[in-house]
Length: 289
Ligand code: NDP
Image 1 (cartoon, rainbow, N blue to C red):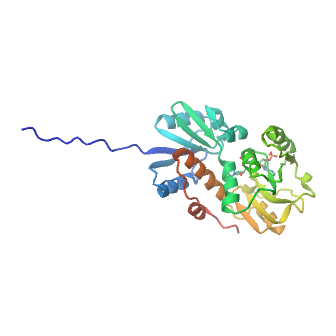
Image 2 (image 1 turned 90 degrees about the vertical axis):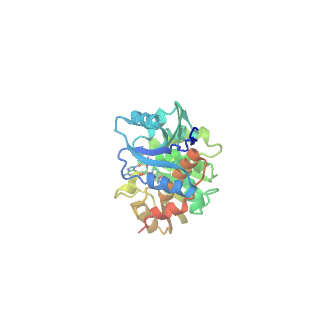
Image 3 (image 1 turned 30 degrees about the horizontal axis):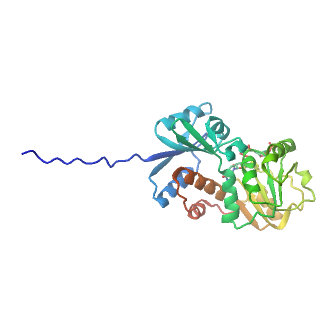
């Protein structure tokens, strides 16, 4: 008599792989953020870091994809190259000219830029500050400002201004975004031109949060109950936040919430599940002292 044989179905499924690519990359908080999201939503995935050579971004992306990778976050200095590599880019990435998240689908590479929506979600949902009808100032005219303009404009501010050290770069943004903002006109210029203006929300989207320099903001730029938002995170009171505090501002925030919220948007895009961001923001927050 033949022995009974049992055939087991192969129940082993491959864990989906994601990573953040940059140079340097060891400092990145993204693995901690996405691993926590995966645990809290019960998603089976791994999330690691990829250190791409400065002259080898595209090869590093393709190697990750070809070894079964499903998606990547992209950080400095590769956000522009990520956009160029994409076969399909969302409006957020096209207007920023940069991508911070990629998704792979066969030979197609989809690109998104979630920095701006992460900023807005942090301000509106986490900090409880309404942007509709407010006067909003973005300091800086680099990639972070490019990504922030459309999501901020979508909130319906009364005024949206961009000030930059090189005023020409701010004016250039005014031209590029003019046909995408409906009735809203982007007010652009240098810092000195802000004299006599007052804003309800002032966002530092320059890299000065990483150094000792304060911005040359004229007195009176901060409204008495303004929100001062520093995009750099984890540095405590930066020169910009000290400047705001000295002007009497009590609502101060750094970019940790923006970081976690942009990660949450990428997670939803990849996995179709929205993670709870509050515990992750709490875990990563460095007090503003
Ligand atoms: P870019 O390099 O594209 O732009 C830098 C900007 O800073 C430019 O507008 C530049 O002005 C300005 N700047 C630099 N040094 C000075 C200075 N001494 N005085 C005045 N202005 C200065 O950077 P990004 O736009 O990509 O990023 C800006 C900051 O935002 C970074 O520090 C980054 O860490 C942070 N960020 C945070 C995120 C988060 O999730 N929290 C996400 C994305 C960015 P000029 O044009 O005149 O040179």
